[in-house]
Image (cartoon, rainbow, N blue to C red; front, top):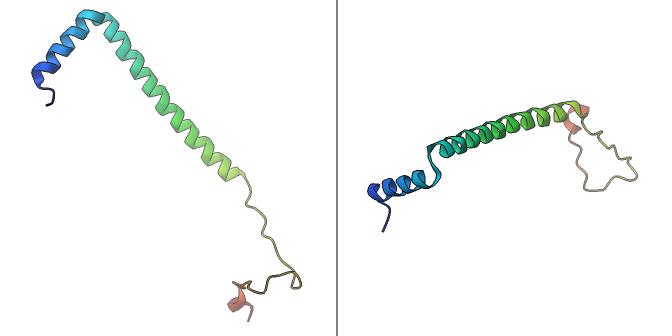
Length: 82
């Protein structure tokens, strides 16, 4: 129970009769402009996000003193300290 080619052709003819070719052309160009604007906005958003991550400095690493360090803390540079 799907649409056949005949059903689609009849549907398109009815749409053309109701709206007219000029109105459909305007709708198509407006839709194309909206899609282009959306794509440009996505590109600008990605560039701004890349700039903001590149500009923001890395967070400072916290160094715990020996007295306040947790007992389960692992020294990742233990091999290089020897």
